[in-house]
Image (cartoon, rainbow, N blue to C red; front, side, top):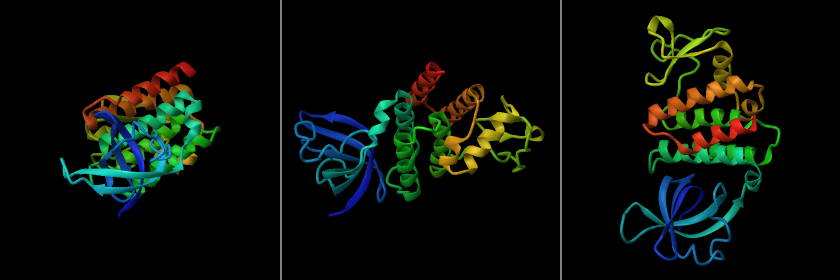
Length: 253
């Protein structure tokens, strides 16, 4: 029987005792799976079926109903990322990353790179008390979108490919995919030099470095707003978790 490593992107109750999950797994990608009896007994799944946990599971193809539904027959906890529960902002960022993968990743198209990125980001959020959750949200979010074929161009003009000039403000157009230079028409959003440079740094350096770099509050708020606009435009929907994350972040200032 196939064994895979998984993250929960969403769960809903089903009938009296079952639960249906949207999972992202390392070998199968984004799938739906039903855990029978999950609401009545936790012994069978060992407490592994919780938000933001990484777990190993045996998945079988369902013989009834949708041919795309899997049956989750067991689960063994690998990492619970318990530190997320101690901070609302980190919890909000974790929720945003899972919702972004759920909405952006195509079904049944596995990416070990995307899975490993999500696992690493959750662990950093849970364990590293010195990082900036807002920084990590953008750094990891940019990479998630790129892995899902929705890359946001921040280093080069999305129209002509000209590199973003260092120390200069740039125009941004979410509809056209990112930064657009003046000769190519510019865009409705003007990012000052600091915000433009921060986007470049977060997109080109490891997420751990990006999560620890210094970005002032006003600049980060501008970046979050721009990123939110881009996600909304590309996915054609507003992510509730990102809105919640920005609200909590604002209250913490």
